[in-house]
Image 1 (tube, one colour):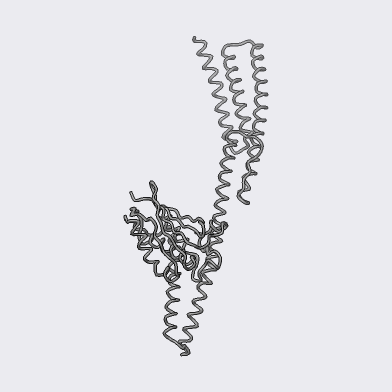
Image 2 (image 1 turned 90 degrees about the horizontal axis):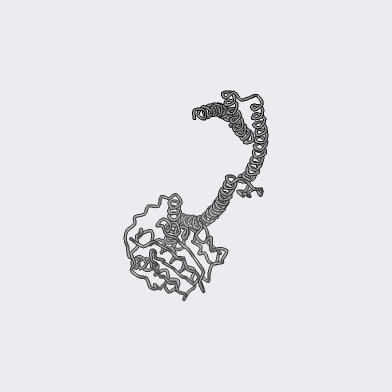
Length: 369
């Protein structure tokens, strides 16, 4: 028993000494290739066994013949181990290099194609993560491009919409100043109308900027959906009468919702004004509400004839106004963007889809607890 303990101690001492030296070498070459590190690890394993064997042989006074046999066996094992480690290291380094080359495409177009050659489980997992990240980056680039396009269109349209009333205001002001206005009272009324229009555009821009900045102040309160829809319909009724459009409320139940009544009234008002302006005379705009287990969906259906399928995804984008036939001259393409921003601030969602003869805008809100 005592001899076995001594053998174990001598073997451990020799192997531990070799292991400490190996740790020091690995620390020195930690910035070198993986092939070198694998070679050192393999060498440490073989040399640790050799050192332990030699220590035991020296302590137990083995014969020179037995010692040479053991040394030869360990040496052959060392050659095979080092060769295997070098081959493994070169293979892993080659796969890593292929992965590096594939990852460089992130800086070009955001695409990523995993190497076709098989790799280790860790490199395969890294490839999958890079592919997922590539997909997210591509989606982010598309959103950024769409947002930039919307911003450019918004600037162009706002510039045009501002230039027209400003030119009219300037002409009317000059006519009044020169005393050549045939009907000054009509000019004053028109100036007031144009100023109110400009004030509305500026207000929409300010509201939209707060939505995009995430600083839209909300004061939620418990309110009946019936009252909310009733107020919005009453506010839009004069415009409906002016355009000869029937405004109908259909199955609106007194369901409680937790919303900012002022902002949500604006949402419904924007949707109703949109629907009325795009519905021909003698048409009908229908407001309805459907309750589910945990949400309520408000819908506004019009008779606009439908929206082209290619445009459905852009309806709520900032600055989108569709074709000239669907866009009133005063529109700046901000109303629906404001609708989506306010609804999402209430943890809801706004969608649109075509129906026979027109389209339906839907606002889904969570029910009050």
